[in-house]
Length: 327
Image (cartoon, rainbow, N blue to C red):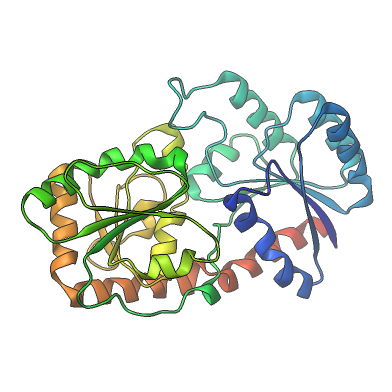
């Protein structure tokens, strides 16, 4: 089975994780996944759509194409799969107005036209099921071979956040608690692993520019990872990948109970939820004060990823969903 997978931008880590990391495993299962970028001028895009006839299926990742492009793609693709792992029917959290009628129309048309929709979590799947006939929930997995399961250092005092610059705004949810802990004399540093940085009042901050080669070692340097989110339509669609990265490195997480965070983080087992300054401060101090709690929580998080969110666990589900198109 040969499949053309199209994504808006392969330079984005999210696109590579969602598509490219599957290639060796799918190849072994007899599914040839060719990943390309859907970008450029109208002529370039149309030529790419016309090439759909050469494949048994086309998988479109995230891109809400316009009605003309969808008509052309649907007329040429033998089978059409739409795959998404963000609330693409809305604008993101940086937007003053997140609601978009145009986005919702394109999303509805695309999910109705697809033979199969693959959603990153149950919330996104619920939106897809309004129009789609077949929906599969498949999370973005973590490749555990990149992450040794070392326990957090017993003298650890590093709270960390990993993410891209556009998501730095979510740190506003945790920043007041970090400032409060620093004022109370709690000994810790805050590490930001990103392509952009912010300063938090009164908090010693280490700014580490993200690189794919150093990602695993930087996550291993943390004692606790945080995943703050706003409660808005875009954030509700988040798939909790940041938390899964912390868990892959056997590090506990403190997160906002928003989106998939609610189902991934199990309070007192592998981390804590926090929805106020006092809750953030209490959860972080509890983990910073207890090496044993950090180790147990990190171990439980790692076990969850191994069982449900590792590449090894998720890839067979994707292969089965794609194989179902042949029936």
